Image (tube, rainbow, N blue to C red; front, side, top):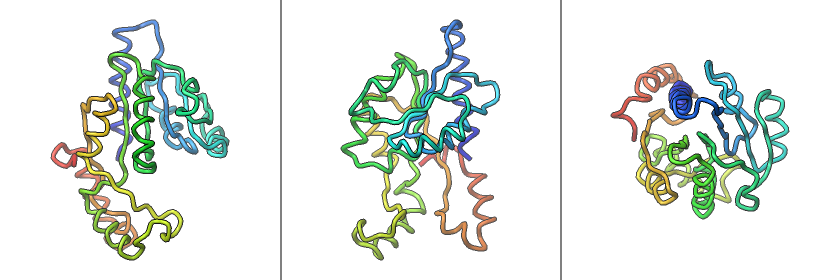
Length: 216
């Protein structure tokens, strides 16, 4: 559901770059790239021939990513401890499933560092928040919290974190970004997809996702 929008945004940014700097190549970073699932998708965007870097904290994740990604430069490290890990002046940075997974005291300095690594004045950041407290998923999360009142007692892999659209926009603004587009994806929590209603849920999510009125 998200891939067509990522393609559209990056191809549009690449066209703008060609108009302004025809002799340069588009530079793209996949931050917190993990095992490279998003990075490998970026490599396959039709008509996009940018230089792609991938960065993650985990050397083990990067080792797996190197098997999945053939065109990207991949490295492991912490940009807060070593800002020189990244080359500045990226035209775009994508970061999926990062913001929700880290504590607030880490989000802010990381976002500010990424802001410094973007090209002025038109570099773009694409982030997703895969736990929206204004969505139906919140009901499932609230139920899990009652069952596991302390996060440390929850089973491994159980995601209880949430962020609201307003909080996310404020966080980005405080980190030096201007939100120029917000897109909503997925009305139904994942549990619905494990029931006989999964076909209906998939159809509705496909229809609703990306509609401006559903962005929150």
